[in-house]
Length: 524
Image: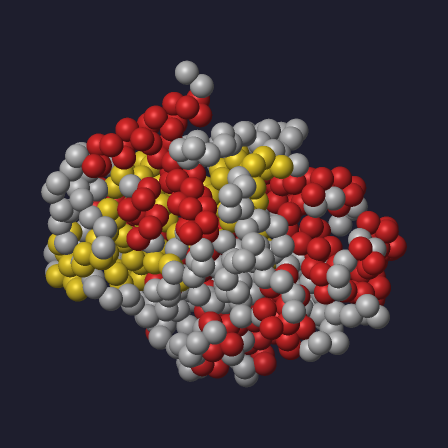
């Protein structure tokens, strides 16, 4: 029997057994640290606002997460806990300053299962400076895929990624929180009917970058059985001006030395220096630290105990965990960033500025880039620049990284390419189309902040198929869906990519679509 067909039958068998179950799962669950009381919501049960570590406040500000003591106390788990501190600009809502924020949320099918279910642990995006686990409501994934979903808060911005010489955990506090959430899942999955030996880490954007980093972390050994990386490869590389005009080249990770240099500089700006820097910073109000968030965007440090090597180099060297990987991104990632830049200042990307942007980003290779992406081939300079930076920063590094992972593990590559997607970044007024832009795939998996953002029956059909692929991967390590194409594996040499669009799921040559032979030939 072909492997892919066997995977489909396994998932269908799991679904069939689900339909025979009649017992509702209990809304009271005894975990290692408390008895939590949840709530039934549609076809799921939810346990919200569960602590997974001690509050990182007082002297625990900028300390590795501390495990909770064993307890048989009762905890109400019917409302989410506070999101981690972030500015109003970064969150899109009100500024939040409550550092007591290390909470997670568990969503399971409503009925009991005879067999332990896969557990999927979600790390949200937001540039390591914004977001929360509770913004992603996972009922559809849990009920349609017959899995348990855990969504996680982790420390953000300066509170999550401050580096200082001699500080234990320097540059890694948010990442350490994420790893601690996996330890909590390992200890408590069985209490919710889950299998602690079948845990899939999945995340988007910063969450995907962290999930990829976890594949190279000794701290994740034995805690991760599969990984789904969405718009967050280890190899992402944002050229100068691509995140926003004037912002220098960035990668998701920085050396510990660079992290600590940033930390010292920001601390001095806040009036803290010398031998009492840490004590001084711990005495500052939270809002003063939140205001420094952007200095710590994409600032996850390597050269540390938790992350010894630069993740991209670790993957290149074959040092990543040998676990199945589901990895890809969106066809027009940069449209959201370029749209945001234009809304802030329409003069940032124009026909006149296009050559300068190319030179800033690619130096002596700018003329070669202009030959591949001539301005006259695009409706606007904004779309030309968005295409250049999507291909250079996101698509080609992702598929190259996938091939490197595939040298030692099963890998499945995808691209989200639907049209008519929700303007999740709120930048459509810029005139830059938001079809398949960054984060527009998220409503296909989650209700965002309680809202179903899908617009058509075709989009709902596509969402069900995407969830089927993702959750079958969590069950078996092989993504498959009924009445949908078989998904070929990526190898060390080729990366066939399954493209998701309403009414048209098909295997494409993404390297050709995104000019990856060209980008891979440039030494950057």
